[in-house]
Image 1 (tube, rainbow, N blue to C red):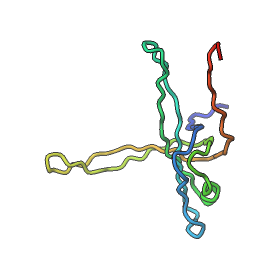
Image 2: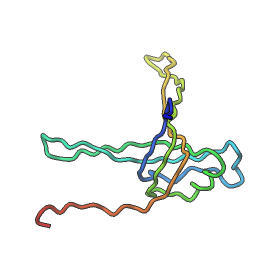
Image 3: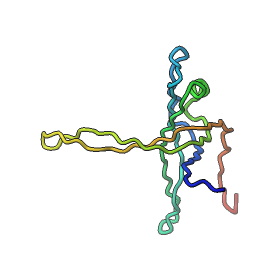
Image 4: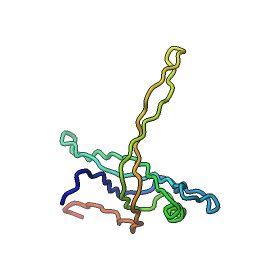
Length: 132
C-alpha cells in the first residue's frame, strides 16, 4: 500500500560550521542541536562551455537528547548524510520604510533530522582530459 503523503528529504554535504549543541548539563527532553549543511549543484553553461556551481545552505534541526550528544563532536568540514522532514515556519518581522514600521511575514525552512550518518570524505575527482 502506498502512503498518501510523503515528506522525506535526503541531503549529503559538508558542515559549514561546528555543530551547535547544548552543554551536557543543559540537555533536556525538548533540547535540540543545529547543523548548517552545504550541498553543491550546478549547471553546465553551453554558451561558455563552463560549469557554474551553486552552493545551497540547509539548516538541520536535530531534536532530542540523543542527537544533542551525537552531534556535539561534529566540526566544520565533516561529510554527512542527513535524512529528515522539511518543515516551514512563518514569522512576522518589522520592516521600516520611510520612517514607518510595517509588519511583514517571512517564511523559513529547516530539515528536522530523523537520521544522521557520518561518511568518509570523498576523494577529489580531477579530470585530466585525454592527455593526462
